[in-house]
Length: 123
Length: 111
Image (cartoon, rainbow over all chains, first blue to last red; front, side, top):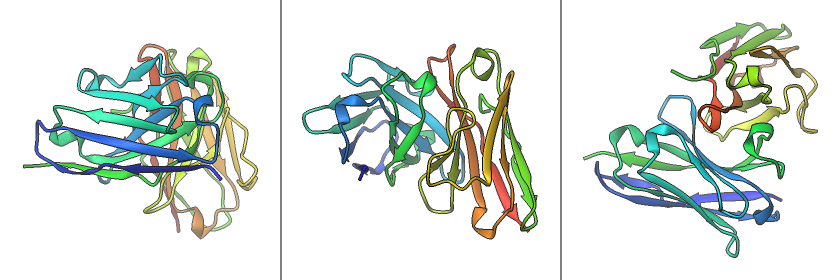
């Protein structure tokens, strides 16, 4: 059974940093693009970042470029999101998700999601 | 403002049919990228309902169907049931943004 379990969320002041982790199990982790998607309280889904199977390519939504870094560890089957210079509008539940096929995200979909981890940026 | 445009809400009585539209541009849906649909029930993570414009995972009832034409896509739900209440999101890829994009979401109410 595919499982994605996020951790690392919490309360952080504006300007602070946080590192989210997502532990994957039940599938060949190194075979899949992975992503982070966030959802502000009461709002819709927003894609945050993608990472290729071998970690050689990363892509970000404009609002987090230069502040967030997505990475992965294919030995420990985990994907991470390092978040620096956090802002109040980064407050959201952050979901880790798996792209179903080996292909790039353009022709791919998110077939497995974690339960999410809440990040609150507030003074 | 989301890159993909969805109506904020739709509603229907049990047993009825509703459709949810998703409008994009020539850098996403119109460029030929696939559209996928997700259902998010209250307090839960999203779940894929339709992928590749019109395909359904094996555990999704055939009451849910998707289609795509030009720069738009739509999700149809027939035989509405109370448990269908929740939020529905379309998703595609945008070449100008080099990333995935979501619609703003549509809240479905079963009257």
